Image (cartoon, rainbow, N blue to C red; front, side, top):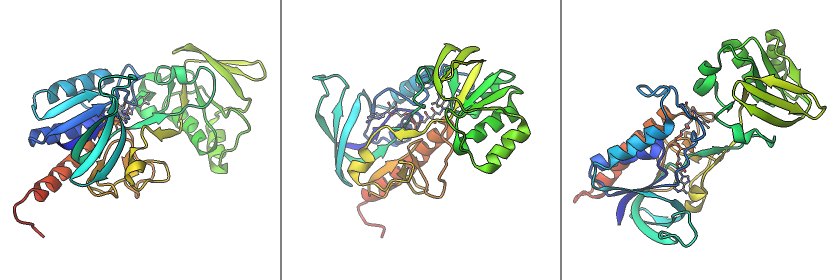
Length: 315
Ligand SMILES: Cc1cc2nc3c(=O)[nH]c(=O)nc-3n(C[C@H](O)[C@H](O)[C@H](O)COP(=O)(O)OP(=O)(O)OC[C@H]3O[C@@H](n4cnc5c(N)ncnc54)[C@H](O)[C@@H]3O)c2cc1C
């Protein structure tokens, strides 16, 4: 029986495992191998690694974990979870039907959910395929590299403000494509007008080309050549495990945690993109904060395990 199973081996999960491994806890990390930034070749804003490969960061993290004999790493997916503090049971699959781990049940005293989010770009042919390569969700992650480029922002409603932001920071030539009738709040429309950002309402029919040579196609037959595109997509949690366990969710579908990384279910912690405080409805979802979340939650989880194992209750 493990002391902690960590579901997800991204920055949050591996960081949590590192903390717990150093405290000699028996830890299993199960990772499906699809971190949110997988499509991006470069990662920014992680000090000491700016511009480095996101995949390399995780590979190095896994190599560091290999030095701790009580930490086990398995490629695969947790498909279900149930139980109570002291005895949770999770079911694993290795992703291949009939694979070795298919249906295997593993027990653990505590759980750490770090399974992340998936972005869901608008249903415009070509948009999802270019995600993270020439269609970007975040000017903090990608903005500097698009400085001075000819840009489009695909967005409507409050998200249209992204066009004003990239026009302010990076480009004199930004077109907002609302992909249908513009429906942004009046103050946003006023800011865009003051900034001189043109708005194209014609529905999009597709995106072709690649970075520096993108073509946006519209329903009226017109096209727009752009060097890069921004599009803030909604996200969805990668797993329903928190729901199965009965954890309280927030309106955005993320798991509600407290300052210690505890969910509403005793013995279940959560960290990274897929968990946040209720008081912060629009949290920063980046590699650094996710790793820090994982560290923080694991430190408090360690305290819980220590107290639970004491020969005399502290009260
Ligand atoms: C295109 C793009 C570029 C980005 N660039 C940057 C950047 O430059 N700088 C930056 O700071 N941030 C960047 N981000 C944000 C960054 O990717 C996330 O904040 C970060 O990856 C979150 O870490 P995490 O550990 O919470 O989740 P993730 O990194 O998403 O890791 C979650 C892991 O859990 C696994 N998993 C999911 N379900 C299961 C399951 N049931 N069982 C087992 N494993 C499971 C997933 O496959 C994945 O490997 C970018 C995001 C995108 C979309």
